[in-house]
Image 1 (cartoon, rainbow, N blue to C red):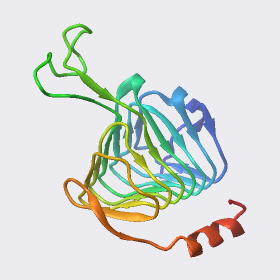
Image 2: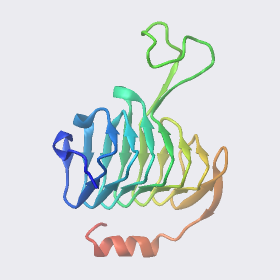
Image 3: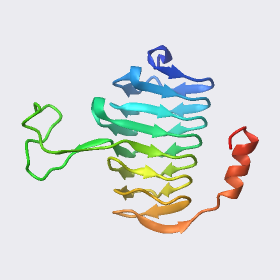
Length: 182
């Protein structure tokens, strides 16, 4: 199995696997921590920070161009097929819609970093909009759409995503502490 050329990245930790079948458009804006896996089909156009013990599943798309920022802190996961929009057009007719439209003719843009705090997870085939923070330990369930910040240690599901229930944090934090975190 071929691997990505790690020398292109801004920073790369140890025990990292990045599939050779990924496209990282701005590798000089990408930092990867330790014990990280990035699977086949990953596509990223933004700045990216990946914390330790994190996993980006297959066929994940993170878009937003040079203005976009996506941050995954330690112990985070994004499941297969999810889409994260760090910059998006508003689509209300204030201008033309496309990343190829010259400035001054573009629709209004919605911009904001997406941040996954420690222990946050995104389920399969989910969508996250610009400027959203997934709070510590929060989970976005499969096939959900997140447009607002989450509360810590809460599971969100649906379109748009709404809180479903809370999850335990004590065991997760204890296990992370044994690995030297917290």
